[in-house]
Image (cartoon, rainbow, N blue to C red; front, side):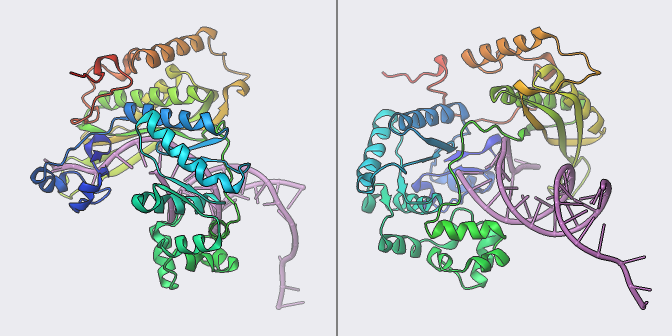
Length: 396
DNA sequence: TCTGGGGTCCTAGGACCC
DNA sequence: TCTGGGGTCCTAGGACCC
């Protein structure tokens, strides 16, 4: 199984681990007993590896499909509108096979006329690998009926805990029940337009478009629990500077600039006897001109951290959130401010290039600290087999 | 002792405008 | 006795996703 950042929660399990009754998203330390007794293999998160393998899978799919929307690290939507319906099944089988052959990553495929239905199909294909060969196409009404009656409301994409509880009160238990509800009912009882969309999607009427992959994020955040608690202002500033630098890097990657910088800190009172009762504070600043320069963003973030720090508290987490994001090619300059020196942008470009081609954090700002006592725990990380020369697989 | 990180979308309510 | 109508924009909070 695989843990979340800081080795906190369990976020991924093999079938064997599930069979032991280890629950999803449960705290790692609470499951240590079963883990040790059953010799469960445990790994810290390893985003270098996951990100790289994810890219390989997506690029494989792009070879055979012009329109791939990457939805998350392990999921994507392909637009097959142009494909004749009698070829869908063969195509899906082929895509599954070629992905596994080229990357070694097993995948399951669901095909239907809306995103929500294809998620239903995908889930069933994944659950019943023997029966479906990992591929399920929902075309005729009988197939759709079967799939929807086998899907509980809480397993529908877009129905969370709150929604599921409400639906049960109305005696709606599976996706077929929900599909047959009226839209005006959904408008009043199921979150307004969100519920209406959901019902339409279940009825095969597309309401959730394919997303343009060039759209830029409206908010960029870097937030982390500390590996060890932080007590001093200088360490807090350091961590916040480091997070700000990361956020600025993400901003530049999507060629944007941000005007609003928000910093938050989460603490436990050092002498509190209450168990896990954190408090938090936040502050934000509006820059005169949108920027993506680490120098500017990190300095501002550090200043905010300074304001938020109080002596005597035990800090356990901090974060930097950038918003008010605009494309960097259309930044509105400020009449009363000096424009940024032209070579600063070039400096950012060089730093980003070095860090992405060598290893991240090869070049950093000193304000982010050297020792980094607060760095997150990752005690059981697997090797970054595909992105680091010194961690390549060794074959004997 | 110990429970992650990073997003999006929608709604209600308040402030404000003419 | 009695005080309009029609908007926009912003923010906080909730729900949801992986």
